[in-house]
Image (tube, rainbow, N blue to C red; front, side, top):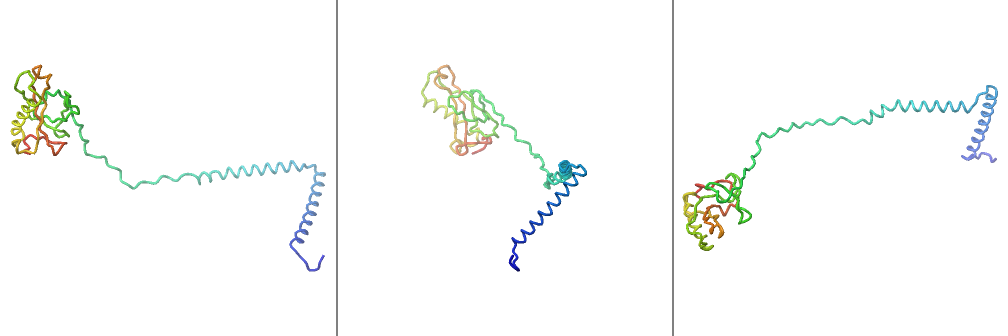
Length: 218
């Protein structure tokens, strides 16, 4: 061996040899002791392993509450907002609507225009609810059962409705911004002797009325 030379490998080899010698000596001592006392090393080792296993299990069980405590969820946060007070305003009452045969309409009734011009029943609502027109007159056209023609019937109906306008609205038709409309019978009804006329008033600038036009002077 070279004088004064020392490397990590030389030290490791020397330590390894010493460890082997010590290990062999310890093994020989255990063999002699086993022969004298008839002790089975495997049983001792198994017992030690079992003891270690029990210790581990006990240690795991004793640590379980800590694990549960550490994983338990925190209590929910407490809200600082004041409870919502229920509304004291009464709900709006539902709109009371009814359908009436057109010939039974009377002045003062507020109506919604039918989607079909030939419909026989008209929806009547309170005048404070949304509606399209208001009945101003219920009358009979003059004439016979003979059909005078569409233009003649329309002219007669318009004249009667315009004449009744002033007494209902409060101003003459010519001075009002409101318009008139009407329901009357067709050719079949006229030939059966029906000459019923229902006059209406409406506001062309406000198609969704929520008030009565009686005495409005509009």
